Image (cartoon, rainbow, N blue to C red; front, side, top):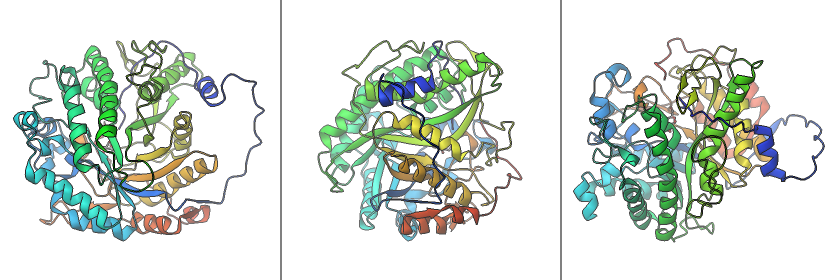
Length: 505
Ligand code: BGC
């Protein structure tokens, strides 16, 4: 869901960066001979097959959050859709886990919502969690455990309780702009590690921090709904420290190796990385914009939490190297991949920020999703290889598409999984794949129109009935056989364009 990136004035060469990190400064190696495309890919038995969701997008009863308030403001959500009309996941725990088990899934990524566990600031300060709120997540994690499905828990997926971020007061400091929010988040992580650590090993601290910051502080279509680049960059710097302190808190409090793989806690972020293309490849300005966007969007945060290298003024040069408060704070990297953006002189230019990439309705021949985003599996290889330079294991924490007619998901899934298989053949250590999403959900400012679910939800039925899309048996087959052939992909229906696209952003 990328919308915007900051401008970097220094040029950072994609190729040069890759070489420097991968092979150091030694002599150039000869180009390897091109390898024939594989006709099949396979996956190891321990590969995790999962789906992902986020609390606010599937649960009801989170009105006391920034997003609950935001959604109640007229015109903020397409069709003025209301999250409480959504899939009501906490009322369907057993049956939804049953859907995963039927598919043969082995992992599930979901978020634990701070506002559900601590509905008021007084509850948080006194550490008196809401009994029913905590019990709901206990029930979910235990139900997953009964089916042998490994939880991957996100501790912040875009949503704050209204006592942390109040979108009715956008001119006041909100969220990480407030001086006490990093410490609050650290305590939250510590408490969740202590409570759930005996059953959870895989953690995501922050989901897509740069998306949350840029869409809230530039595009102004997420809370707090402002357009202010000074505030944006202040938030981003707090986010890296919030992640690092959450990382430390989880390692301190989760010392139980629940899945028996030798690691009690595996902690990272879910990072939204994209391919950037120039509007005009013959213009140096546009090529430069691609390099700056790639550096900022795909590497700025990861450089900070893996290498401790912080480009504080966003000029493309590292200002702090190996910061001990940041370095080494990722045990793996979570990659959310949704595609490609164009950037260049045709983009809107913002102070501090520069050209704004565009992802909707790009003028090319690629098939589009219902949100008019390009379907671009080949780009997956680009971002995977770029992330692999850090030398950490990778989990694909999100990948999916809006497909209300259920015509494109099977081919999309197979082509993206094939790219993962090919990356593993190249030696990239990819440990799992989480398709976004298990069920249709509340797609933020897009409301209910974009349908991302493996299972579609009938929002008109009181039971919010779930129905399998065509991709469900395909995913089940690949997860069971650990194998995917090019012939299988060739046999799937060709992509079709959405007859009635959803409002994109
Ligand atoms: C977010 C999800 C969202 C998905 C599709 C990701 O950026 O993490 O919450 O539903 O994109 O837009």
